[in-house]
Amino acid sequence: MIALVHHPIDLVRDRDYVLECHCRTNYVCDSPWARAIAYEEYRRNWFAMPEQMQGAWDFIQECANDPRGVAEIIESEAGETIAYFLCSFWEDKEAGLVCLELQDLYVEEAFRKQGVASQLFAYAEEKARAAGANLLRSGTGRENAASIAMHAKLGYGIYRYEFEKRL
View 1 (cartoon, helix red, strand yellow):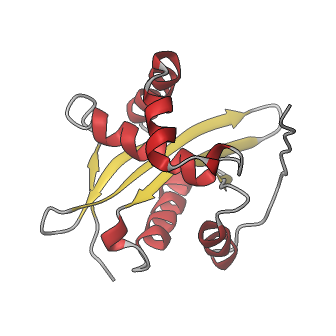
View 2 (cartoon, helix red, strand yellow):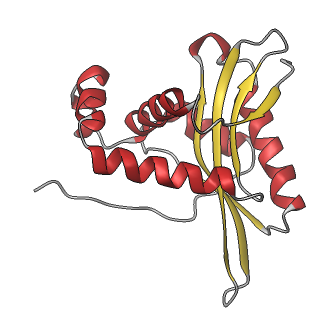
């Protein structure tokens, strides 16, 4: 098991890396029609949309500034960047839901299939309980087989299906 060192996102220094990871995560989880283009073109298109990019960055900052959320860069003990991890916190008092929601999890290629994601999910569960959450949510794309299998292995169940029709 890799020892993980958690660092809060530095909102100035880490901006480019975090936005790159967010874009990569979106690509893997996007619709098949959106992924019909190569990642480099998808990335070029996404970074060319300043409002979209700024909206994502505003949300990331909101998570980073909420003491109940998670906005972290994960490193090895040797200082190698392993992952980027983002969770938002929300509550619906009327429904009695208090939730930590995993928004982004990007593990660098060299560290995949070594239990990093599972460790980060366990960490998120600890953070959720400590913040008084009674629910932990996470989503993925319908064709992201590795993520779907990991969610199932960790005891997550499907709570919603979303549909789209390309016009």
